[in-house]
Figure (cartoon, rainbow, N blue to C red):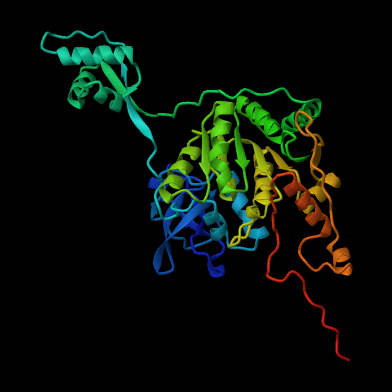
Length: 443
């Protein structure tokens, strides 16, 4: 058998081991080892875990050691995610192991085994005609049930009062056969209908559909609050799903995900997975496994969902792209927008950034043609925008007003209270001082 060599990243997040080590793949593992698998290998004077990132039939390195065993029964990462980890390590100046580790949900490490697949044993009637004696009434009843409910699971048969012993006898006689299958959850009913788009929305939607056909593109949708950006998101997602591809929707706040999941699943009539940091480790592991197995056409979540193991990604939607919560604070200190951009490039997908107040860098790139810019300037059904007054507090200080409220604000608050109306004040200020006294320099 032709020799096979594996390039492996050792799961140690230190610079001394931040490179690819080559190992021999034993003959009895050559059919089993695949890119993205977690394995155990001899390293120095111990056995360490690592991820297979390269496979080759030749090498110039002598005195190689063999892989000891396989940890994961299937690859944890596909080729696109492995390439993304290399780009992350270079761009964010972290180790390759740290980049790879960031792609796994909490509770699922390289050393941990994957959750068990949710496959079940299903029973089918064989083509052979069944003949039962009078003493085989239970077998006959079981066979007739399977004949009417072809593909039913063992759990369903148990609920119908059919024992495993009866099923075993039917299989031995060749009346039925079984196989292990993945049972998917029921698809949500589409009980939220789409609304008619305005002329402005229709123009934006048509332009984004053209970008979908072109493959890897990045677009910024700059729309005022209430302009109907969400409806455009959902229509694009619906089109991508019909083409057999998957959609990733990123939102900045964990609190937004529950109602968004309910709304999106009911609007698109598809299964929607949710990923965010408030989930337990067990929930994260299970959801990650289900996404990897292709159960969900749509994944919705916060920053960490950008690494969801979607293998046929066609659209990434990043709502409120200007939010600071998309930035990771610990190593690797990535920004979800940059990771989403790389994933769109590797998957030949469309990345749509949406915001009423885009970040400076995104708006600059859109103005300079690096991103495609689409704008929605009117609210849906044309309600009036609120009046906004900008007050220069330096002028207030010059006029002797040293409070945190401008004269105009106090006047407007008084008017509202006289009309028996309510006032909501939002304070966006850090610190304790309303002003900083200027001390003259001593000559």
